[in-house]
Image (cartoon, rainbow, N blue to C red; front, side):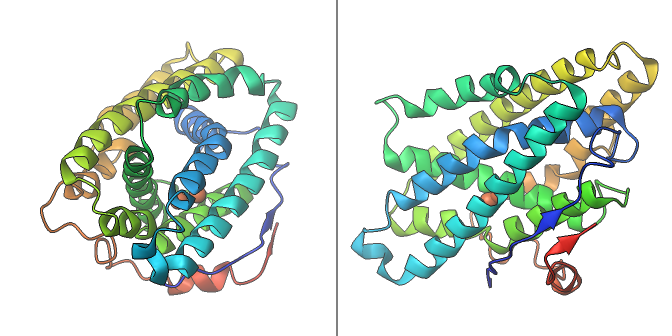
Length: 268
Ligand SMILES: [Fe+2]
Ligand SMILES: [Fe+2]
């Protein structure tokens, strides 16, 4: 799939401190928590893919790897701005909240985890972000219309555009399928746990946690068929299919309107 270098800027200030995601406190907190994980997480993705860039087996993939890194670096840049602004507006302690994810990520930085396993982690999480991105662009997760949602849609578009890169690199270097499947299960559990913890801390800080409406949105998120978690389940499961190929998976999504929407760089 063609990857495009974009350089967007989003006017987030007016909406970021509200429940900008469907006017739903829990979903908003979950996506804000996920945003806190992106700067360090995407740095890890870029590093784990770049670790193989000089491998002769990947000589035809250098452009793909380069574009993957350009897109992830732009996401990192925009999410750093997003996270700083959110902390300014809400009074969150960025370092403290981010450290919950950092501690989890540190498990992948020990000597016991080699470059191939790090790439397996990236490949698994890239499938999670592409799955989520696909369902965001299909309108299954975010119903609101504001610049914060636009930023998530732009990020979603690029996650879908580069969804095959890490997987292709992993397959080309003969990464083990067994390891990939184990890592996927562990990564998903870990990610849900970390994001939920950060989101709950945010909601407690906002004095929104002990509210019936928040419990209702939390229940919807985890258990409802239309909730953000279950909506992604079928696509998540397909990762374990024998003939899984990220390039053809989810190809019923037409990216044309999204490419057009994000062909200009300013969103207000
Ligand atoms: Fe990204
Ligand atoms: Fe990505």
